[in-house]
Amino acid sequence: MTKKYTIQLSKRAQKDFKSIQRYTLKTYGEKQVWVYTGMLKEGLYKLEENPKLYGHTRPDIPQIYRAYKIGGHSLIYRIEEQTVYLVAILHGNMDFPSQLE
Image (spheres, rainbow, N blue to C red):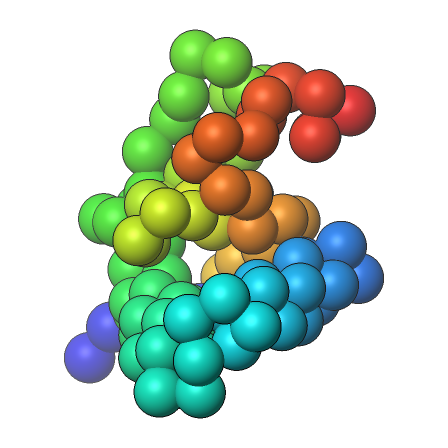
């Protein structure tokens, strides 16, 4: 049996998640906020199972981070032992390097 990873969300990632939910609700409605929230949560569950399988490195961010694209966003995280530290949830239109300074 494979050992699961623990997910820890930074304050920034928590803020990003709530901001995405508010924007989605305001722009697309209640049904879509449930759909998109479900997609993001499913992504977190996958990272909990195997963060190396789903995320990848990107040339525009420090190599300690990995990115896992879900919908229009990417979960930005690093792995230390059996812990996945989610540092941010960034929209694809954002300038990733400046968001991670």
